[in-house]
Image (cartoon, rainbow, N blue to C red; front, side, top):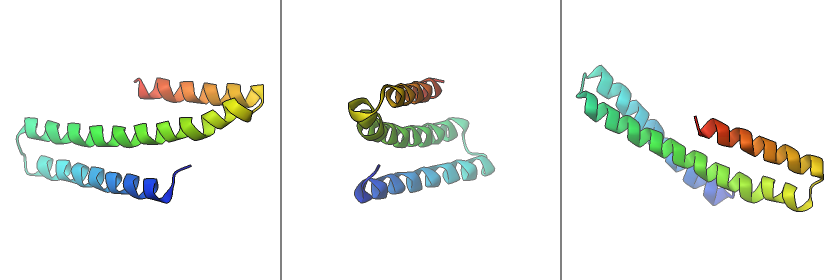
Length: 92
């Protein structure tokens, strides 16, 4: 699925997200300005969404692509249905 380098990059991104979320918790505890908290939340959400996009792209390039190229019609249909489910979930 992911190369070691890609895993390392995603792990680094996730550590940054964790730091951002922890910062939000501290900001709330410290009763910081709401807009500042919302901006930090937006940054964390954007970073987490980027991780999801990277993983989704890799899934399409590997699993879905392979099923379309060499899989049976049933396997192809299953991968497409799975992908559509993910797209619907991300669209919420």
